[in-house]
Amino acid sequence: MCDMTSVSGAGVVVTGGGGGIGRAIARRLAAGGARVVVNDLDPGAADAVAEEIEGYAVPGDAGTEGGVRALLEAAAGHLGEIDIYCSNAGTGAGTGPETPEDVWQRVWEVNTLAHVRAARGLLPGWLARGRGTMVVTASAAGLLTMLGSAPYSVTKHAAVAFAEWLAATYAHRGLTVHCVCPQGVRTAMLADTGRAGEVVLKESAIEPEQVAQALWDAMTEGRFLVLPHPVVREYYSLRAADTDRWLRGMSRLQRRTEEEAPG
View 1 (cartoon, rainbow, N blue to C red):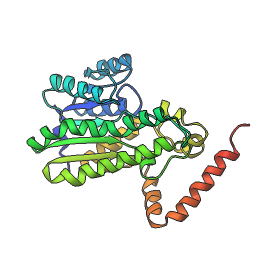
View 2 (cartoon, rainbow, N blue to C red):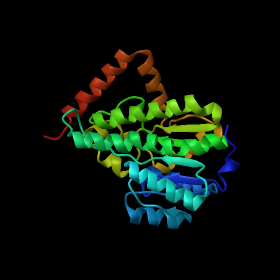
View 3 (cartoon, one colour):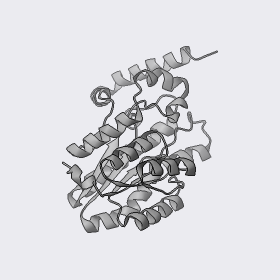
View 4 (cartoon, helix red, strand yellow):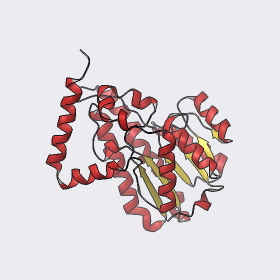
């Protein structure tokens, strides 16, 4: 279990912090006393959130190797030490196998390799100190799947797998890992998911602040898996216990999206 008094004064980085879940996480951790570096592709969005929470904006692309390296360098220069890294930036681009190679690559870079690159830069210092916290924003799609977007589903599964690997490999050396797996959240990304997102996610969608609070609760209780939608745990259990039944249910949802699609 994490002593949340340690958040007060902690150096925190939040990628994708200019809006949506990232902004909500930045606000929640800042309210707990953290010193927050806000990263976002949109410099204006990063600046606005940083100003609101009395943080520090480092605009840039956390989906590239150079962007992650530059972010870590700038954040460490401002904070001294990075205690908590929230690898939150994500993208929902792509549909099926027909998705162009460059789109697949971009989704892979943002949704999966960004976590790997951040860990590569942070782990030596964290392991030497015997403490550090990595927060990976994945998705319920990483535990289940997301109809309508193979690239999103595949890369979010990979994000969950990497977070699990980190926790299993380094927990005994002081690393804490939290993996955030919401379903629909009322953000711009949800609006871009199309018919599948509308059918599967929209009705149960929650606010980004609820995700941030779920993360805070998981950090307080020392839980790896952060499930802002409790029903995901039931679906995840069903998927493991009776995969064929679960797939039949997903197939019915897929048919529904096709039957109800405009035109």
